[in-house]
Amino acid sequence: MHNTDKYTETKTTTNHAFCVAPMLDWTDKHCRFFHRLISQHAFLYTEMVTTGALLHGDHHRFLQFDVTEHPVSFQLGGSHPKDLATCARMVEDYAYDEVNLNVGCPSGRVQNGRFGACLMAEPELVAECVAAMRQAVSIPVTVKSRIGIDERDSYEGLVHFIATVADAGCRTFIVHARKAWLSGLSPKQNREVPPLRYDMVYQLKNDFPALEIILNGGITTLDQAEEILKHVDGVMMGREAYHNPYLLADVDKRFFTESREPKSRQEIVMRLIPYIQQQLKTGARLNNISRHILGLFHGEAGARGWRRHISENVSTPDADENVILDALKFTAQ
Image (cartoon, rainbow, N blue to C red; front, side, top):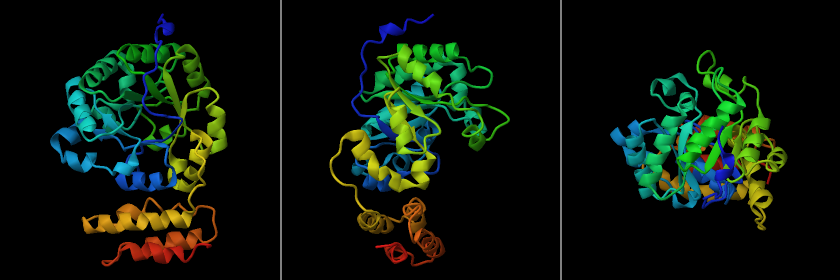
């Protein structure tokens, strides 16, 4: 049985009260810049990047980001301590606020690489990885996991995993409150089919009071997030924040005691225009940016016209910021 009282000090340099989840193919640098225009304080995460991609690919393409994105964490996928340590140093060199190890992604492609959720079956290896990363960098090393995998879903098993990795020095755990099935379910089904077990994550916080516990999974409203925060240190919202991004406009006031009024949707668009212009000059395609902003007017008058105009015009050869400005005409002023 693990002694959970020995974790007496929480070493964190940032506020994880409200986080936007790492989402593969979605939370790229354009998405994060856009989200930062809406919320100044929400903690942002990159999409997962494997150690192999950084070590053998164009690492600058994966690591570059805009300074306005802070606070922002880089999420790594991997299971080789030496490679993870090398990549963590690269992340720190690029001035990220945190490096996060993915122990939650259930896709078959991830399992074949021996990283993601399958690592929950190897807590000692995860601890070795975390120890190597911590030795390599001074920024926080955090872990994002599930509550279990397949039939290994007991609370005792989760406690063993958390305690083992905490022994290696990890002080912040983001826990998706569903277990993952490593076969038989698609990644999408793994976000929806296994039942949410918030009670297990709440109990973790009770049993490891000095660790920072952030709950992820099934959060769709800020009211729900506030209720969850009565039990844990932070919440992480994923797809709702992506599809309905203006929801983030109230995050700073409700979770970070920010007194300034949020920017309007139209003001956010106008602040995005210089970024679009600059990115187009460096070779970016407009649709790589515009795809992230389609939901900005979700639920508002003109939302359909906004989405349709962008979708129909974004891929023309001369598509530029004027496509976005013209789409604004469909929205209520």
